[in-house]
Every structure is written in C-alpha cells, then in structure tokens.
Amino acid sequence: MTVPSLPPDSLLTALRWRYAVKSFDPTRKIEPATWQALEEALVLTPSSYGLQPWKFVVVEDPATREKLLPLSYNQRQVVDASHFVVFCIRKSLSADDVERHVARTAQVRGIAIETLAKFRAVMTRDIVHGSRSLHANAWAANQLFIALGNFMTAAALLGVDTCPMEGFEPAKYDDLLGLAPRGFAASVCCAAGYRAANDKCAAIPKVRFEAKDVIERR
Amino acid sequence: MTVPSLPPDSLLTALRWRYAVKSFDPTRKIEPATWQALEEALVLTPSSYGLQPWKFVVVEDPATREKLLPLSYNQRQVVDASHFVVFCIRKSLSADDVERHVARTAQVRGIAIETLAKFRAVMTRDIVHGSRSLHANAWAANQLFIALGNFMTAAALLGVDTCPMEGFEPAKYDDLLGLAPRGFAASVCCAAGYRAANDKCAAIPKVRFEAKDVIERR
Image (tube, rainbow over the protein chains, first blue to last red):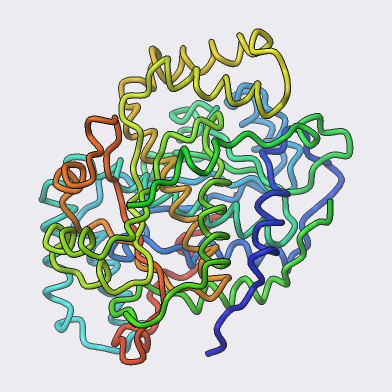
C-alpha cells in the first residue's frame, strides 16, 4: 500500500485556513463526492478497542434543522450550513454492544467468533463491568471527540469549512431526534459547508497559546 | 488565502492506511520538519471557547520512556516509537486559566483586554462556576480528544504511523512527569513513528461497522 505523503506545509496551510465559521453561505452545498468522503472519514475514525460507541446523525431535512435552531441558541449555522452533524454517544455500553463489535470483527476478518473470546472478555471486564463502566458515557464521549477532531481536520484539508458546537440543549435534541429510546445521546455538533463572504470571524487572527506553553519536552 | 484542496481519495487513502501500530521500528525516527508540523498541528487544535485546556508532553528522554514502560502494561510502543506524546488535561479550570486565555486573545488580536469582558464572563460563568464546572475535567478531556483525533489524522496524511493508548496508569504517569502539582493529568497517550516490517497488526483488516449502522440521515 502506498504510504501517504502530504507535504507538511499543505497540512499546516489547511489547519491555519480553518476556523469556527459563524456565518455560512446558505447557497453553497458540499459536492456529493466530497461529502461522501467526509462521512467515510467519520466511519474510519479510530476508537478504543475499536468499539465505535457512536452514531453520527446527519440532519438533512430543512424542517428538522429549523426545529433544532431554537434548541441551539438560534445559532444560524444549524440552518445555513450545507450539512449539519449531531455527534451522539452510545450510552451505558452493554454486553450487547460488545457482542456487536465482536461479531463484526469476526465477519470482517473472516474468523470464527469463538477465537475472539478473550477480546470479548477484556472489553466486557473493562467497559461493561469494570472501573470504566462507572464513567462509560464519559469514555464514549472521549472517543466521539476523536471523531470530531478527525472530521474537522479532514474537512479543512478538503477545503470544507466547519463550526463545532457545544451550545445546544442536548436533552431536547435527544427528544427531537428520538435518540434516547435507542440508547444514544447528542454530545456535540458540527456544521459543515462554506464560509459566507462577509463572515466577520474570517478576518480575526486565530488565538492559540505559544507552542512553548502547550508543548513540553521531557 | 488559498483554499485547501486535497483530493478526497488522498484523504481516504491515508485514513485507510493508518491503524493502531503494535510494533514500531525502533530504528526509524520522524524527520524534524515532519515532527515540527505535527507539533504545530497539536497547537492549532480547535477547542471550545478556544480555551486549550491541555498540555502535550513529548517524552524524548529514553530513560524516562523506560520508566513509563512498566506503567503502561509493558506495551513496547512506549519505548520503540520515534516519538511518544502524553496528552494531559488541565484539571479544574480556574478563573486564572480563563484570564490567561483572555490575555492571549487580546495580545494576538491587538485589542484592549477591557473589550473582552463579556467573553471572560461567559467562559467563567460556564466553565468555572456554572453547570460545566461540575464536570470540568470531563469537558477538558473531550477537548483533548479533539487534539488526539486531529493528531492521528494529521500524522496519517504525512505518512507517520500512530498508536493511541489508554492502557497506562494515569496517576503514576502524573507522578513521574510531575504533572499533578502543576494542575495537569495524563488522559491518553499516542506513540508516533513507523510500523515495523513484521508488525502483525499491519495485515489484519480494519474493523468498522458499516456506514449505515453509524451514520443516520434525517
């Protein structure tokens, strides 16, 4: 397999180009091939044990987007962006969730499910019954934010703007999208599309601490 | 500014190429220019409010890496990978942490700190005193995992292998690296470098649920 070889400068150019867009151009839609790649990027996100404790809800229906708007402090990104993704954790991971992953592993790798007994036991002991089970939702949220980081970086490289959003009413999202009865909970959102020509945030310098303040060499 | 335009196929090729490397080639080091870009990618990671509640500890000293090994269930990635990063949250965010960010914002944007009073108040009310302060560490960890997702994707695009690691003893890491007295806590690690020619994980098919099982269109 060919080793990827993006020039480091191209990576940094993309990461510097991106920012949390406040005003999206409502007339510009992400091309289907580009969007499909971003969905595939979400699917490919790594997670602990490979458990993928998540669901990515892509809200396409304009009427539903309008209903989410007041549940999101009327932030227009919800309705103006080309695409809007609700990142959801799978709550209270159960033995069934582990089993689903074990079954999928056996299927993809073409091996007998019996050979995965130890893998199943380790995950179950840790996440379902062990110390991590006490904060399984926080653990799942951590994994979900890997997906968010992967998604925003992937989008930037493709020239797609994003705006991550924690400012919304999660319980009301769960109700509206019917998430709770299915064991999911909205944790964070991300709008994706293209910045409006007049987005006032575009020209504001990005604020980051100096490298020496966040990176420590030991 | 030029809009990034990586072809979607190049993104997916990189994300499919990556996997959690078990055996790193201890003889292969990441070139300084490449590593510098990956550090810069960490610095550029987006976070809620831009608060950057983190520290990235790059453990370069071989003796320290050897000491971390038994605290990491003897996973050889800790010592064999070219680079090893400990991702740390800033614990119990305080008014001082908010102030640091406000001051940096004023500095980068060349504006008077007084103009940021509302920004300061919103953050303080939410993270320091408000509902989020009750789980400020979980919130900080979420942000940290954005950095992890960004880092792994960035590395893959540059042809650098990674292995994210939750299997270590965080409290003992905190002790060894002197993190606790400085208000930081190790949350997750990531080894980076190059897969060994004989890494047995390289040939195993990647396991992901089908897109229809994790992506829902509404």
